[in-house]
Structures are given as structure tokens and as C-alpha cells.
Amino acid sequence: MKNHRKKRLTRSWPLLAIASPGIIYLIINNYLPMFGVFLAFKDYNYVKGIFGSDWNGFANFRFLFRTRDAWTMTRNTLGYNAAFIVLGTAAAIFVAVLIYELGSRRRVKLFQAALMLPNLLSWVVIGFIAYAFLNADTGFLNNTVYRAFGWESVSWYSTPGPWPFLLTLTYLWKFVGSSSIIYVASIAGIDKGIFEAAQLDGASKLQQIVRVTLPMLKPTVVIMTLMAVGRIFYSDFGLFYQVPQNSGRLFDVTQTIDTYVYRGLMELNDVGMSAAAALYQSAVGFVLVVGANALVRRFDSDNALF
Image 1: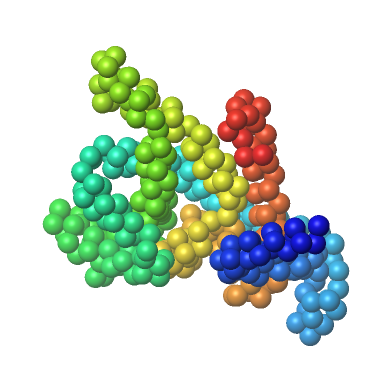
Image 2: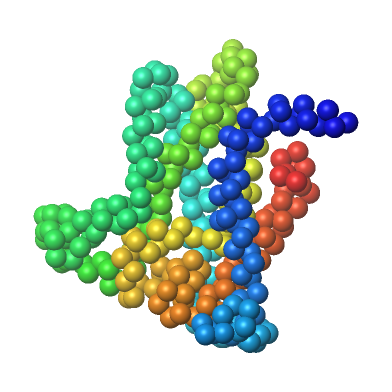
């Protein structure tokens, strides 16, 4: 038995060595912070420290949910993520089909490279790009586009109305390219004989896409959607903080749970309420992914995650 285990360990250690950076990162970034969950139930005092601070039960949660910010951040987080899931999935599938149908390998690679470029940019860089377009005084939109049409300039960073559209457009621009690669791989894995049979039956290219490609993508779409639902209570911090330039006038449409936790911790020094908001975020996200998976398992058990 010992020799067998030793042989297995000898064969596995190269794989473990390769995986070790990711495992270490996962432990440090995802598991060690879980020890701070009890801060949500404490009246944190910097002098007394984490373990010496007094317990206050659910006071942090009561204070959190009595504020207007609780509704605002929950509405924005869920609303934006729902839009990102629906529009992002539709756009990624459209782009994937377009890439696959281009035919030429060189054109496919060029198209993929162009779409992947935004994903390589940090949110700080994208925030600067957005600022170059939207700045009230020197921005491209006000100084070039609006002036050409004789329209009045818009103070973008103090006008909440356009920002749901701007944030959604920015998200799609950054992530659709990388998301489409998964669907391109799925399409490439479809048996070519199915397409040939459809072609022999007289199906046009559009009919092949609608009747063959899209139905065969269903398992991938379900898995990707379930994974996205698991993070529906998490928002991309850079998108909602860097792109709007942390403008207070836009908080009604840009405040999400992640930005609220950051501001509560870094600007208000309210550790207890920030921990309560983060725990609320994690708990609801867990319930949602389990519920969504149960729903999928009930109607299509083959595509459920667990």
C-alpha cells in the first residue's frame, strides 16, 4: 500500500507543482479571508483588535439594510449583472458564429486578436479612455461629435441617465471577445457530419446556424450561465469605480455591493458594516447558484453542474 501511494505521488508531483501557484493563490485569496466573516457580527475597534472587539449580533446588518444604500447597491448589482449575462451571452454567441463562418484561418486570427485586445487593458486604462471621450471640457464627444451637430455639451460625470448604457457598452467591449473564444471552441467541436447532412437536406447557412449550431451550443450556454449566476451578486469593481471616476453624482446608478464595501472600508472605516455587506453578498450568491442549478437539474439534468 505504501509503495503504491509513493508511486502515485511520484507520478503526480509534476502536476501538483504546475498547479501549486493557482492553489496557493486560491487559498490566500479565497479561503484565508473567510476567517474574517465574524467581523460582520462585531463592533470593530482598532484599539481592541479583531478578537478583542465586542460582539454586536446583527447590528451591522440592521444598520446596513436600514440605509437607502442597501436597496441601491442590490438593485444595481443584480440589474447590471442580469443585463451582462443576457446581452453578453447573445453578443458572444453572435461573434463566435461570425468568427467561425469567416472561413479563412488568417482572418479568424486577426479578428480574434482585435476582439481580445480590450480584455488585455486594465480598468485604469479603460477609465482614462472613457475620460478622454466623456470629459466635459476636452472630451471627444462634446468637442467633436456634439459640436459638429450643434448640440449642447453634456456634463457626463454628473448626469446619471446615460450611465447604465455606457457601463453595459463598456463591459461588452471588454469581455465579449474573450467570452466568444469559448463558444468558438464549442462550435469547432460539433460533428461536421451534422452540418453536411443539413446541407444535403437543402438547409441554407442561416438555417444550419439556427437548427444545428445554436441547439448544439446549449450545454455550453447553460454551464456559462450557471457560473455567471453564481457571481450575480458580485460586480466588476474596476468597471463601476474606475470608469465613472468615483463620481458621487453617479452613485445612484454606479453603486454596487463591491464599491460600497470598498468605500465603507477605505473611506468610512466602517469595518463591521463592510464585512456584513460582503457576507450578505456571498450568502445570496451561494443561494442563487444552488437554486439555479436545481432548476436546471429539474428540467435538464444532463446540463446541471452538480
